[in-house]
Image (cartoon, rainbow, N blue to C red; front, side, top):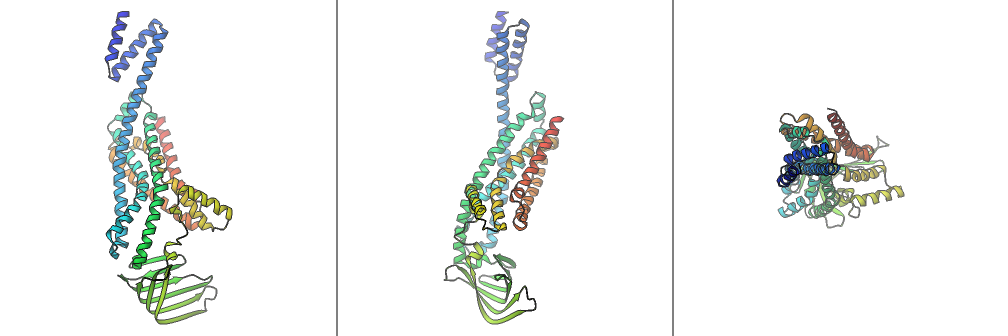
Length: 423
């Protein structure tokens, strides 16, 4: 018997296959239990535990590798979609105004952090759904379960990958996005001062603080059919109508453009005295548009140009001073919560992708993962935009407007996972 044990030990040292090693250690453990040898029982039990641990690490690495590859492919897909959309927007508003191509390239470069931060959560959902769906279709998940592995073995790399992607997205959203926005706005001011007509688009409506401009056709620096609404006074409203106008630069500081209007009509109204109004007519008229009306004052940093630390500090000052309006305060709250909700949406998407892929991925899981992922991404994006709109216009709580979609996805993911475990 001693010689047999010696031979088995020599064989075990040369075996590298996990399954053969497991069978060998199980036989040696069974033999030790029959002989009631406590030392050998403890030794082979420890070897089996180490073997299971090594096997789990190998499986976790394999799953993480698959998740990362699919995430990378989907990230490139969403990045290209948002990138092309940004190019089209710039081409519509800037390129056709004959702005130098080098300047446009720099503007696109400053937009990249926002594109990266926005692409990562959606790529997490679609990539994880496709990866796990493929594993379900190829019966890899079934084999893991049949070999005694728990769902937690698969859930661990999914959650860890979601956390890592969230941290990466948060860094882009919290540091590089404000930096890019600052540089973008600075360059856009330079473009606007050199060519004010960039700001005017044909057949469009331009809102500026308390004013609104309805623009007709724009050809280079000439504008036709322009209507200007101004609510500058407490109860006063001014409406200016011009058949044609020419846009020119201004040498005066703070003024971004001059509108030289021909055949203009000015209507002055009082909201409290509806029957009392004045009408002025002139052959020519000059209207100055201030820079602060379009881009805001240069001395004030917008919420999008701040990091989460700066926003928290600003909110603390606004709450202590109690001088900010409710709308302004809620705008800063929305932006502060947005700094966290969008990047860390990757964790909630990962939590949803795991059970969703296992439930619907039995047949052609890769294709279904792509379809479900795109549908959920569009819905999530629309709900997030609506949340910002309602938060700013209706004054609803900024925290719930930004985090409600994530919480809903997280709860749905937990419910599906619990149902999966019961089965």
